[in-house]
Image (cartoon, rainbow, N blue to C red; front, side, top):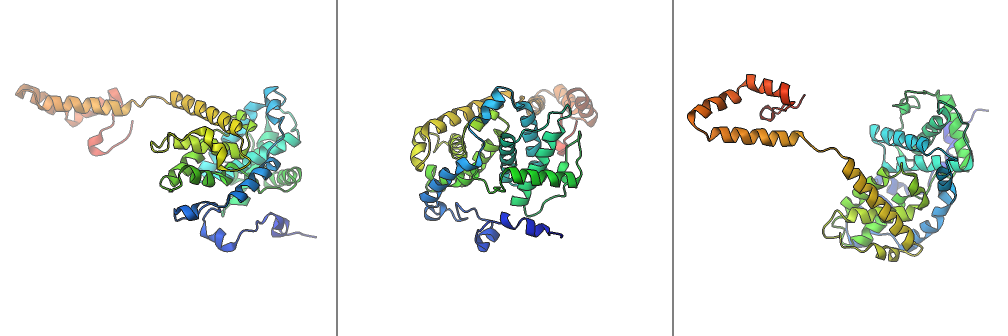
Length: 337
């Protein structure tokens, strides 16, 4: 007997109000930034904190990477690919996070075959991303299109579907996970009750969460601690909120761990500083400023300097300058090398 796809995934449908889903608004906050409408009841958040332990790998999962029982580099590569596809198709950040959550929970419960090509891990990554996209995205690419950037192995759709079924079985079909995105709206309200910087806090905290997913060290922390630490990091970029004491985050809701939040917050700060040091210096803007300064200087010189200045600004000279310094002719709005 043939079973339709809609029948197979009936249990995956969530019970939100249809008007709430169609409005596109998050369950934490409405689109109007009034303090009374921004935050949901603390009891709901406290319930999520109690439930989050059911949607994360076991406590010894991180130690398996530390002991090299599991390959941390393979996980990092898979997470990097998931983030690449998320950006390519403009998926929601939650889709990327759920993909990694499924992958980690699967690896904790089931060991993959070890191969030189690493195709089992690649297949698991595609299957987890496909499932997460089906959960969160209104439009999902085909299974072949979803494998963008997969040069080593391209899997047939039927192979991916079989892997999806295995993932669903291992996860006991519990795909509606508790994630840091379940908390960041509530925590943003706590740190900024007026809602003045609400949008920035959410956006910045989201970037921090996604940028740290590759780090296996964050597997030590549960979603509520990651969300609180990310909001605190985001607040550091706002002068009005930079004096918020991280030690007070525990008071935001019952069930939060002060030690875990502070530890996660310090780790995030270290990684943010490391990323800032690794960024290469911007050379081209300095070249532009220097050359413009020379042009202004030549304009204020003597008549003989004026003639050389006109030759300096001539098209032929600019072409020579382009060839020698890789400079961009800003006067015409061109940008090229």
